Length: 463
Image (cartoon, rainbow, N blue to C red; front, side):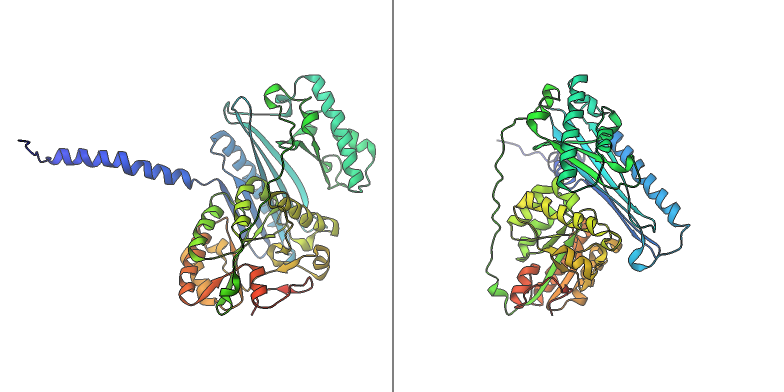
């Protein structure tokens, strides 16, 4: 006969702790790991200036502290300067924009190197933005900063690098029609470590940026070259060599849905700016499936490369991809060439990932004029409902703003880089579904409303 024993008070406590350790703690660890914050966003708008800053969190204390110091220094320097200046007007505010590119390099010796490049643009009321660049190269395994010298296979390799760089830089200025003297190209490509601060190892070779403003304030261009794998492998140490086999680009076929079923429904276009983001955009994509919703993403060109898997997923699942320019600069403050560059480079970055160029453009801050419309040769999409999600960062307030102001044909402005914006959008969808709304992309909306988009109209709604 088996005798059943009741647990005493101590035994019950011990059992509860065991359950906590076995079940609850791993669950907490999983959720924490899944949603660990991997970047920070600063957006501040005053009567006098606006600040937009994005920077990554690598979860390497030494590197993260260095990045934060750089960001704080640039922000404080800008604010101290503009606080002494007279306001210049609503559409021409003083501005600080800092964006970044992150390339994670996994080497044959299993070390992981992070290459983080910041482009900083400051508008202080002169004729154009002032640009500066900062790049961090960091070995996460050995916890140390790197330079180009850590990759090159001896002094002779550096000499070869200088020769290759000169050749491709000359090719660049010829292809882009830049009026630059050969002596300038020789100066920026000489065998000097300061010339080779901004480099990245990519599938198509070694990319190097040469900011010309370091030589002369008269030149604000940045020359970008790619040294192909075959030549790059002549320069670098064995563990950094790459295979020279060309990879075929995968063809991405987006999902298509029958939108005729929405003809008798009220329609809303949810649009999301400033992404993509690895964590928040991917979570949004998963949740949208529960609402039979397709949305439009207006992405920043400087975020495409580091988040290309997320962009592919969004496009493949039938969402629409538009441009929000490359660096989020006020287009009204740029000359024609730079405006074209902001738009063209973003379109190219998107095409490199999903195989097609976008046709929709949302100008930063909604600032656009007739000249820029002509230059862009794209459909300009603004918004009718501004949730101010970047400011409130409160999902309940965001959802309320959407639901209270919703109407058939509305275009809603949100930002998928904020968790609260994702939560607010999904909460609003739950309520709007009950009111008979369907959630469509910009192009689906135009088709359902029998509207042919043109290049001269600025679209804020389709009502």
